[in-house]
Length: 139
Length: 137
Image 1: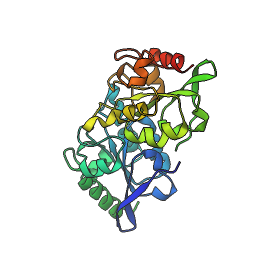
Image 2: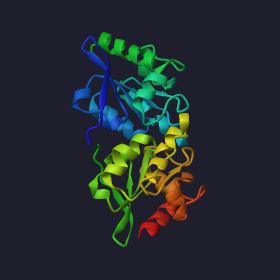
Image 3: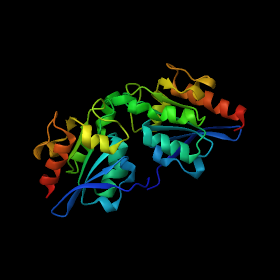
């Protein structure tokens, strides 16, 4: 099935797109700041890298065993893709709008930090920073 | 949805236990399957994937349970449809890795349908999946 996507913001030819699952990443989300309700595990890292999204914010899923819940962040860093996670206690996992509207960043990768994203920031503010950073970088 | 080749780990009476990294990869091909996956058990997993696919059972990751127990919201939803479902503790298995759910996972929550089939908190995911397979066969 095709997952529902919501465009929360558009600026400078870039978008902030919200979806419940990272599985909604596709051609239409290339270059966008993609905010979803998924965990940030290794398979989500693969989806993020292969989809060509500009940046990603997901849920840290309580971090979990071997920090598997945020494994995607490092993978994205290696590809220069800014990525961050919100604390599982701040937003409802599986609900992308909750990530965007309620989420508080618990961890951000280096690429995201370069765009001004930091732990404790709201996901909405972080998404704005990523949007702005992508526009400026022109990548 | 995403595409994955599911590993079949057990078969009995026309039913199977299959492993998937993501619940977003389930489809009508899984209508006779207990799906053991690496996904969280949030609400969208039931409504968008497990129920439309018609899967016969599900074991996922509790994702640390999280805000408003969102990490296990699908368990109750599946219960109302008569589908056995359970979650493993996020600290017991690597989220996103279905094989870890199956090999390392320890059940932290189970719905009433799963409990009736003998699934209990503290049980390994492997044993829980076997109970579900037996229960639906």
